[in-house]
Length: 291
Image (tube, rainbow, N blue to C red; front, side, top):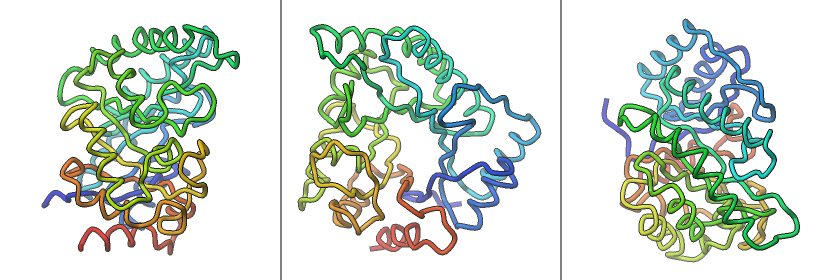
């Protein structure tokens, strides 16, 4: 099977199970890639998989040529000063990496988190980055083998006390992790735009990706969350919109599809309705990819 330049997919619900729900839905939608939660995205429970189902899902995706990524729960915050939240976050990331191995996923996406404290006192940001380092370096060292899944860091839209909002903040975050070879980047277009990236300008998306590569290094951009934005650039609001119907526009999609750094990188849509039967969102990106 010929590898696609940019496999296109969306986030798929598990529903009745990985095979009867996720894989079945992915095939019906014609997905080339998919993203999935391995448990409750808004809870701390570490859901154990079922070995037979995991194997059937893994083999079914391989047979259909579907690339798989796991998204860690939304509650994960490795910069949190609250001991219980921090401990649960570390356990969740480690658990999701194990689940990624079991289901054949190539990566686990983790939001870069925040330092929470509303006072914004001196030293809080640096202390939070030290917590991120202490949490992630031991985990990253366990996945040093190139056959193991990547850990992909997803910068946020800038809301709250973000540790890594937008592309420029990646520098300090990756420095804290010693630019570990298995710490890659997931670029969310809505997040980047909300944090100020000029994706709505001609050439702005190309410059943004160039900067990601400059900061993170070649080959470290491993996933794109492809979303338009309901709000203008710099809004710091994470509200996704259907592609071509928001403030970013389709020019950004076209530039992403042509940038050398995205060659082989899956595009996962998180736009409203993108996983609904009859949605035009997946077909739209596939059509743009052919230009």
